[in-house]
Length: 598
Image (cartoon, rainbow, N blue to C red; front, side, top):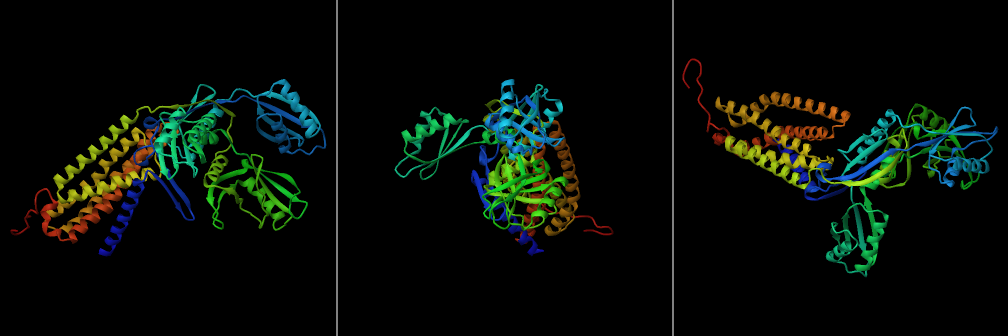
């Protein structure tokens, strides 16, 4: 028994140390060998992520883009390659959404941006010249987007944004053909600047230069040596160039200059669907510098799943893919026919750009494969998101981009934090005053609970909104509730004359059913709130339910593991002789025994 408690104590100390370490650093960036890189950073206290109501963020408005549908039929005998037409469209400056073959085999459907008569005439002439003789080319403007298409677009955008890591977004239809997307904390740009050897920068010099570039509200931090981080409002290309020039003029030569913007990353994922194509490549020379690619009808539409991972053989980042039944059958036929044939390749194209063209080393029957191409973790993740989320059911164009201020602001955050600290403090005072030494144990367990809860919220990460903070504060009450049940059971056992160690064991065993059932009802309530919140667009309800759910799980762990372990350690340390310190009555009361006197 003691060996078990020693092992549990070591585990508790490890968890406590990791929680403190996660909260001690504002930015967490840990590489886990063979798995992934854990990178967490937020704009709130302790590096927590804050929601729109507390932090503000990016505001995007998308509109359904009216397009032109073209039915193209070639003269007999023409071998059509969709890539050839895409190339013609690109040369004509026409944005193309898709090119797909239909029956009969020399007829194809093309969806492009809205075209006028002159553009259609120029397109027909270009296809005649560069591809082959056109028999018919009929164009019609696509009808207004339907309700089903707009709802589908909202659903896909929500999946992309959530996979991107932005929780608690606001995504909703606006009118008949527009979608509003608000992303917490996605506004603003971060510039990483490293000055050259000849420069002698100071933080004050950099601040003055940033202000001179018209960014008075920007935050400047020295990252070490001659490296500085500048956080500012969202910078467009012109503003980025102006900032760099001003820094060079007023501070010194810049060796590296990199600007990232969360809203830019989000826009790429929301509005772009990666087009993945697989082709059979036949090499006509030994080095495969000359080749012929054949379309086999296998594309991203045949994917069931795509996710970023690290290759177990090389450690490099790849995109693992799983085809559906149709795609798996095509891929199986392809690999069976060209396996171990050096003159054949599988050419993989993403948005018409070749990624990789490997030799098939084996017959792949189950449709599982991976795409490599010198990807970074982020690029592999972004590609997997674009492939996984599917194609938007209606073309969208960005018509408005802006920043939204916090709905409640920092004052509400400070009041919420103050409310949480006051609530925690009052609970601790009550527990210590009423339950004495057992209350001290509960106080230590609650401090452990608070640290572990904040660390989990940061590392998942959970975006904290005001309702989310309310769920966290409520879960503090849930955390102490289990301790109260245990201590009351202990008090009853002490009253009938049991020893401290025996009272602890019996008290825990008898309190556990009530703790289990009480928390089970909370889990059910949280599950219902999460279900309705996700389906009815109630992001605020979802945030409350999520933090309450996590808090309840952590509270059960601290009550059953931390509190129990601390009480047993106190019993072993000789506190059994001071049993009056563990009950409000001040000691055990005598009990009448049947048939005689006590």
